[in-house]
Image (tube, rainbow over all chains, first blue to last red; front, side):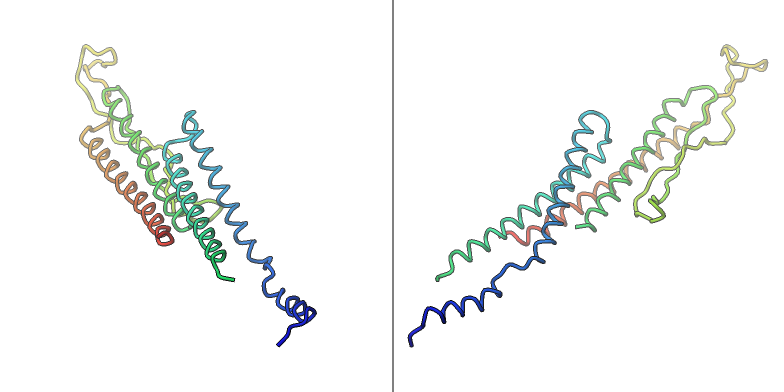
Length: 93
Length: 130
């Protein structure tokens, strides 16, 4: 069976909607990134405050532990995303 | 993540409260021989922010112990009255040491909880790794 160019173009146009990026999925990730940045800034502020004697050591330890967990989470998720992307790239076409 | 961070801030508030308590205990011990000194006590209250209970603890205002001051007999003392007595402090070293020990144990418990929460959160993220 011979496929005409126009038929292929029409099929492609019909399936393009399915592969289009969903604008909704990015919002949750953007919020998480915002939270991550806020946690990181709080950790840095607490560390600087403790070094200059303004914050108490408990606040510094708490902020740094939370920053550590946030960074760990972000790195783990990034590794997972990169891994998934490479898995897609390895797909035989 | 919010459960873990709430648990961490509760544990940190407990450590802060016990540190405040220990500070007042050491002030009491330092002033055990100060004439007229009344021992300081501090109360613990559940922290409420904007009408909501945060689950954390905070220390209330410092109160002075109202028990009678010790009458010390020392006629050579500058503050001694006609009978040779003066008002000492009402600090009992035994009570203060017991209080300090209790604060220390409670601090350790909070520290353990803090570490536990950190380990749990870390173990959760370990699941995603290979």
